[in-house]
Image 1 (cartoon, rainbow, N blue to C red):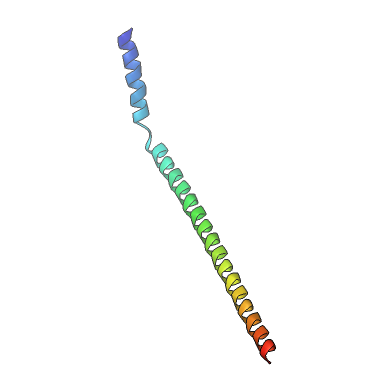
Image 2 (cartoon, rainbow, N blue to C red; image 1 turned 90 degrees about the horizontal axis):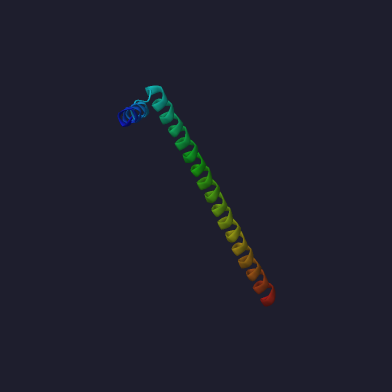
Length: 80
């Protein structure tokens, strides 16, 4: 009884170990596809973050220029 059980366990583990190459290849292809999806998603997030940061810098620079121009105009109106 125990020998038969051991033999069944050995056969099932042998079946698990000897997977067809097609299954392994498709698994590798699936993993590659997932890696590509993750890389593309990370790239999109990085691009969005860069665009938002650049837009924020442009807005801050525009406000700074506006404040400087307003200060110059106010000073020139005050003195002249």
